[in-house]
Image (cartoon, rainbow, N blue to C red; front, side):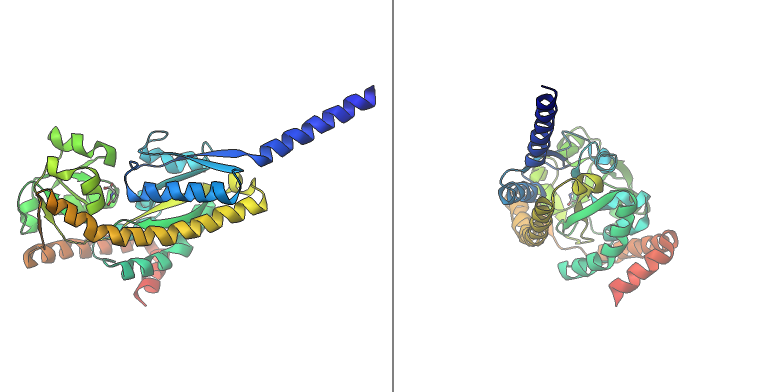
Amino acid sequence: MQITRILGGALAAFAGAAISAQAATWDMPTPYPDATFHTVNITEFASDVAEATDGELEIKVHSAGSLFKHPEISKAVRSGQVPIGEFFLSLLANDNPAFGADSLPFLATSYEEAERLWAAQKDVIDELLDEQGLMALYAVPWPPQGLYTTKEITSVEDLAGLKFRTYNATLEQFANLAGAAPTQVEVPDIPQAFSTGRVEAMITSPSTGVNSKAWDFLTHYTDIQAWIPKNIVVVNKRAFRRLDEDTRTAVLDAAAAAEARGWEMSQAETAEKVAVLKENGITVSAPSDALIEGLRGIGEEMLESWKADAGEAGASLLNAYQQ
Ligand code: PCA
């Protein structure tokens, strides 16, 4: 009787362990809406993981800041409230300037440069994330950032006084240096911020312009291609270690595939989404020489202040990039 009870208990415990190792569901908060190519890519990543693990690990994507607001996502993964999440990498620039290198104006403006910058950033970022109990799975860039306005812009002076939508501290600094008035607005809130007059200009990708239906509330797109910022997908290290080895391998393989696919998607987006802006009546133009010169001047100033903040780690990152 006693023995049966003990055996029974042991069997039940064993069965319980087997069940929990068999099927896990990971809630994954992301900041951007479903139609965003990053979210499409993540959905594919999740289904690759489910397929490779025979459904043992299900990643449930909660898009558009529906589970955690964008500024909370990195903290939620750090604290283990969720095991995995996506966010805009340069949001962590407050923790360390190295996270913000990809949002510096005119440091890396082509995909080739963006790739080299990521290679130069990667080790520093892995180490910083590791200290926070996080591990990077993959990073994917947005298309080059362009200028959206309600009037023609031919010089930096034309930006003076404009209510300017920003998405991180670096862009806020940029807007201030341009004499504009910055306001932080998350992507899902862009249409309302414009239609209520809270903002009247922004710098973002052709993707976000199209996903927000920019033609409903503005008229001009100036293709300044100023920087190529990235989103990153991270996991909580403890949660990752709890997976069995095959599942870990499946996650890492799916992540590598998602990174390669995401960079391709991003490049394909650029021309495709600029064409959609045009089709919908937005005036698309190349920047005037005066505008570019003025913006580059702001970029140089920002790089100097970044270098001062970023210290030795920043210097070696820049060195690695510029080699
Ligand atoms: N879209 C996001 C980040 C960069 C981009 O192209 C945004 O506008 O917030």
